[in-house]
Amino acid sequence: MSAATTRSRTPDRLCAEAVDLARTAAEEIAAPGVVGEHVSLTAEGDRVVTHFFECKEPGYRGWRWAVTVTRASRAKLVTLDETVLLPGPDALLAPEWVPWSERLRPGDMGPGDLLPTEADDPRLEPGYTGEDVPPPNSVLSETSPDLVERIDAEDAELTDRVPADAAVNGRAEIAAVAEELGMRRARVLSRYGLRTAADRWDESFGERTPMAQAAPATCLTCAFLVPLAGSLRQAFGVCANEFAPADGRVVSLSYGCGGHSEAAVMPKPPKRPEPVLDSMGTDAFPLHPSSDDDLGHS
Image 1 (tube, rainbow, N blue to C red):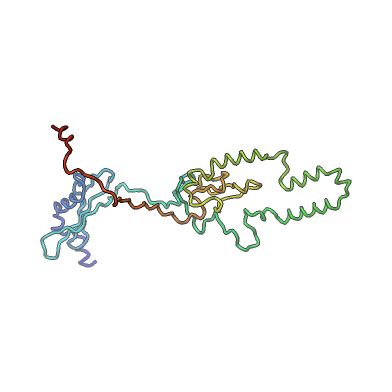
Image 2: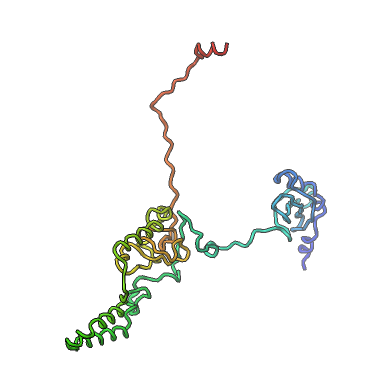
């Protein structure tokens, strides 16, 4: 161990005795009455000493005022170097910072909030990759090779049948085809039923809601929108964004929220207009009080 290192760990006598100088420096930048007792001191180097004082500021339990003093070589005058507030061994500290993407929970978004999506978001994928395998949400993915063979076989069987068999088993054949196409239901929604349902959905998640008014774009261009089947697909879809307020709900294509898949840029705040100054008109200011004012004060 060198001699310089040994001297640096031994507090300088004049700097160590400058407790009053250090306290005065701490009291100058702190509020009155928050600098407590002298706790300890430590040698920072040759003729450099830091004094620690107790901090009595509410909310800063365990913190200490650290005042560093020093002096020049062969000089007896001790001068001030730095004054800061530092946490002690048992100081009350804020919890470790967590990124917003890990703190966010479903339902936290409000009107005007934006939720940018990352380029490698696992919930999204390109709309067209050029591969033979269609996307999982594509209509083509529902038509498997086995299903195509079954449909072709049934078409050939219906074509080869004689008219008598068709007349006898007509209702059964129609039911089989309807079941294959997913339309074997006794009743379906009428035009009135569709209209009332659309009115309810549009009232809850439509373009007139506060969330949609503050959204950067509509659901029509959002990758999290799952289209509906039938005639309602022209105006509605299902939201598939777990952080969006309408997750799992039927939303209007004109609805929108801050969780839009392409909301990657935060909008700039609106700029206030310049103040209007009337430089053409004149204002009359009396130089002498009126006679009525004189009478009133007499």
